[in-house]
Image 1 (cartoon, rainbow, N blue to C red):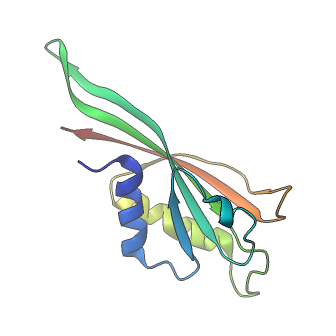
Image 2: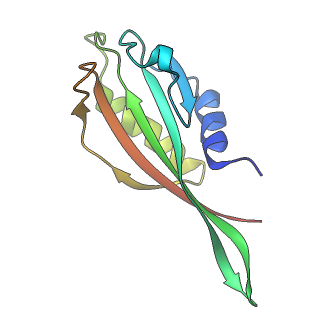
Image 3: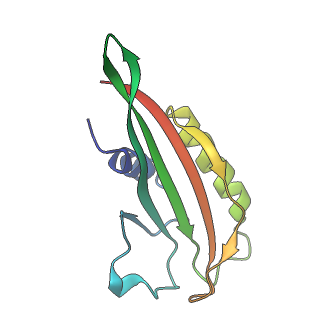
Amino acid sequence: MLLPVSQVASLVDSLNLTWLDKVYLNAIPKEDLKNTTSTVMLLQETDSSPAYLANNTFKGLAMGVEIQIFYKVNLADDFNPLEAEIAFMKSLKAAGWLIVSSQHRTTDPDTDQVTKTIYIAKNEII
């Protein structure tokens, strides 16, 4: 079984999102922290707990992933982040992930990038 962040990264890769330039797992490399010319996604694990408890054991895992999107500073005028996020969340749902929370957009104080955070979860039998 792949790590939850790897599962989501594989899904994101298969979606061929034209508005997304890079996907990072667990951390953004130091050399890219100030990059404002690319839209990047950071995937971090939030849960990996035993699930489906029965007979003094567990038969699955409750997995959670935090998805942070850092939009490039100069977005195209015809790009609508809300529409892109809705389509992305529908793809996650179709792949079996539950959208736990979709946070409001904020502006990163260091880079002036608009950011979006989405929390997803999924229980998987092992």
